[in-house]
Image 1 (cartoon, rainbow, N blue to C red):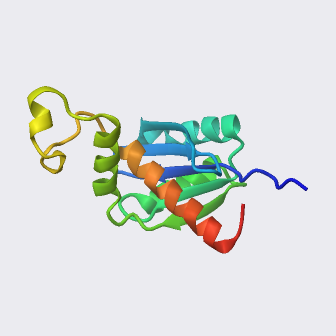
Image 2: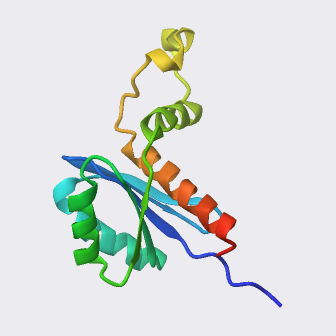
Image 3: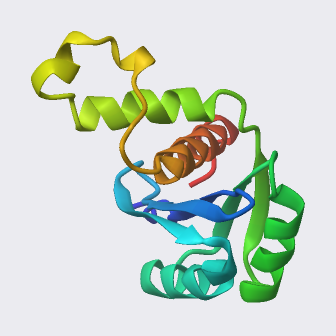
Length: 143
């Protein structure tokens, strides 16, 4: 008997001016990640949820979380919303970014902990939030 594949998760790293978004398959594969202006959040949530069949939204619990939660509920009223602890996601996002994009030239001589990524890494923070939720689901024994 085959088990249904775990459902994807859409994660939001909310900020005052921009939000990181990521959609992860239930098995943890990154399907999509992007950074959007805050005023486009609702529209982008509807697009991503429709494209990936998302029924579960994960939201970071710190800066801008409350107003982002209201936008999620307005854009995706049927979605199940989970708040996830954002503690240390920025630090972890920086590490993930540099693992994927190692510094080149003279920058490779500097520790990445002393460098600032040249692009916004809010999407990587959203990936980490989604991975935290997927771990919770696995611990609960849910797909």
